Length: 174
Ligand code: RB5
Image 1 (cartoon, protein in one colour):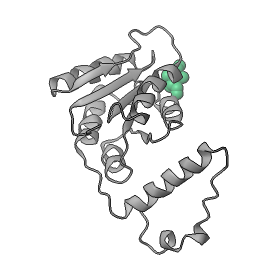
Image 2 (cartoon, protein in one colour):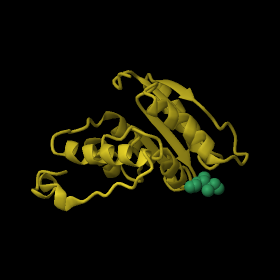
Image 3 (cartoon, helix red, strand yellow):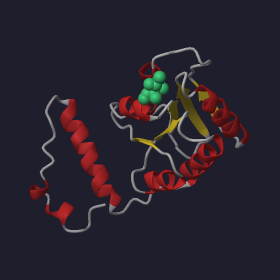
Image 4 (tube, rainbow, N blue to C red):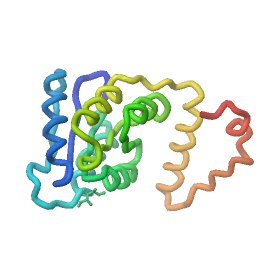
């Protein structure tokens, strides 16, 4: 999936519904093709189902980027990060939105519909959409995350022993 393509998937629970509608409208105005996987009202639903719809598509490479919104953004980020290849970040400031693209190359943005006001949400979204990943030294950390993910998918806990990784200690790690 070419992430420069203006296509994005968006999901929410009841706590994120109001902000999701604002975010969807904004993305459409920016020229994005938005795939909205619900929910479609403030009726109580379970956020892991909606997170899974978006995270699965990102994990499979069917879409480059996604947005998930619940009341706090926390539950969405927890479940989304269980999916291989997903790097989801809860952002409550524009600085976090910028840094999580530049350093973590995140592919899912999580927002707290009852935490962050609508104007701040749109600013966070814009900076997250437009900030490129810096690569370079950050690749070392992302490589370690990929390694941990691979290891733990086989049912083992990743040891993550820094002492066996001189390059990670030598100040060249991100
Ligand atoms: C739902 O009440 C709430 O728990 C959910 O929206 C989310 O904030 C969970 O992390």
